[in-house]
Length: 266
Figure 1 (cartoon, rainbow, N blue to C red):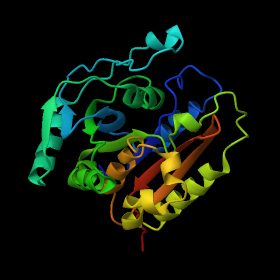
Figure 2 (cartoon, one colour; figure 1 turned 180 degrees about the vertical axis):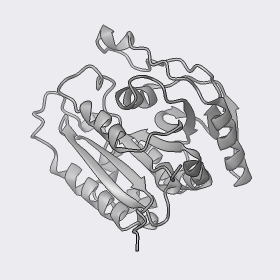
Figure 3 (cartoon, rainbow, N blue to C red; figure 1 turned 90 degrees about the vertical axis):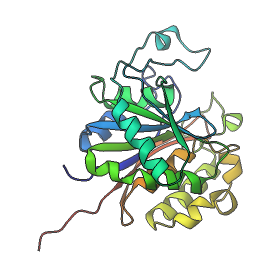
């Protein structure tokens, strides 16, 4: 099997599977375009711990970690199998690199099951979830991804799930989709230019270098997963950008794919 890409997903609101005004179909398109993984190692913005923890649950529950949404959303059960062996393997790789890590049983939060439901609706791709550390910086998460990079050669897709911009306080839930805050584009254009240039140092310093960084991410747990996906990518990765638009004026949804460069036949 060829090396799998690592990806970063903007998982949007929990209502993504049931709201026709949101770009749910784009996730299925993305899955169709990507090689099919034998398993997914998922880092979601919604499982936060002091040190890395990998879930060894063989049948992870669907966690409805939100309130005040339509009843239909709470009825969704995503029954993908767990991947306990993958979780153990991930912990071993992290520990070998000097990163504190342990295992525990944990379900799939909405940052994990919402995009996976859209990408693999048959729930037939095993998933192991790995926590993020919101008190640690982007460089730590890049190092986590780098320690896990060899998994991509073994049929594992490393997926970071968050949101490229995430400030609910700046969101206007009655705004027209065309009425996006121009500062969103300024931030995402800076970020994507650095991704395209493979400028890891600047990206890890985004809070000091990117325009409007603190406005776009008052706290950065929704962006930290991208650094794990970036760390898991080849040094000479090719970047694919799937832009899904900006919603509620301030919440941009963009997915990024980090692939090994294609080998050109001579």
